[in-house]
Image (cartoon, rainbow over the protein chains, first blue to last red):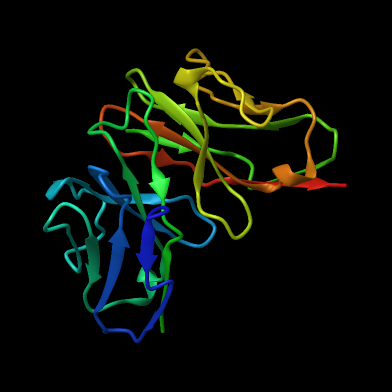
Length: 117
Length: 108
């Protein structure tokens, strides 16, 4: 594909509802990141995969948040029992190499805007 | 703790004026610093990184370890530079830590 693809583009959920957000990284990209961006804030790290392995989930705000990448390509971020404070743009990003350092960069998707009513 | 601070939420200048977007970081090791930009209705994208010591679209940024800063500069702003700019830090892990961003408005 042309870039990182995220779906849906917009999601409105009632408080307490479960949601699933999808990310299709650039083909062949090893590393995949999820970020949460609240209104007026910068992206905040949630979790990171290297292929199918979730290497860092220190940014997940609660056990209601769960991410997976079972086959090392598509990833899903699931939020259970959504709360109003979960309203944000959820960004997915991928990069080709194993390490972000050494001159590599992230390619971002357009994000999913989640609104919890 | 790793932290990135962008003190200005909004910076407004006229076309042709010099621009400096401030970024300070907190990290005890040897950091990798980046500037990402988001133009209206577009996705976040890399503008430049300190290790490359490059100039992109007329922008430059120098890492000053003594002042723990990585300010973004351009001598003559253009209207098309109007966007959100995020400074980001990569420390000893693979994740990027972003600042809160500065909105640059360039008036004609």
